[in-house]
Length: 140
Ligand code: TYD
Image (cartoon, rainbow, N blue to C red; front, top):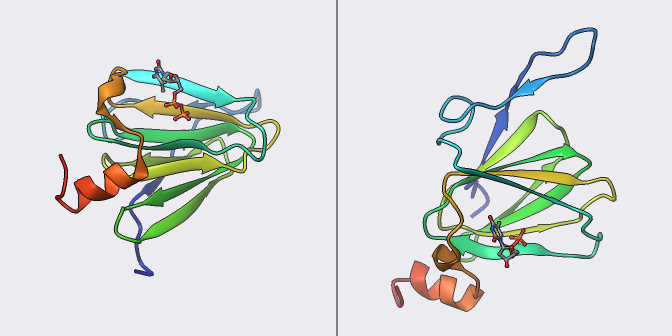
């Protein structure tokens, strides 16, 4: 499907002035959920692929606050889309139950992740085959 577009790009407000830039991200205002957790990924080599999971519960917003990376989102039915994160004021909203892979990290990449949940490893689906079975209703 050419128009598969599971994620949503978000433009955050910029409150910079002559002293420099300031980007504000408020839970349930600038992102579509209350923020329960933040984590950030940096120091990943260019050939590393991170993520490779889907989440039953968690929604995320990802922002490259420095550097750049790419994220591939897949629906488990053969559709996929690649998004590039290239600016500190642009985020990408990822709904629950999509497969995601982060890769092509620039050397200076700092990928900030905002999550709607506290960490619970049991809501992560880490096997792609299992994700496809769940999507197709063949597993729970
Ligand atoms: P992982 O989800 O594989 O990272 P990524 O999706 O960025 O590739 O997480 C790596 C490890 O860190 C794994 O053992 C789980 C742990 N972890 C937490 O304990 N809390 C968290 O919020 C996250 C995101 C990971």
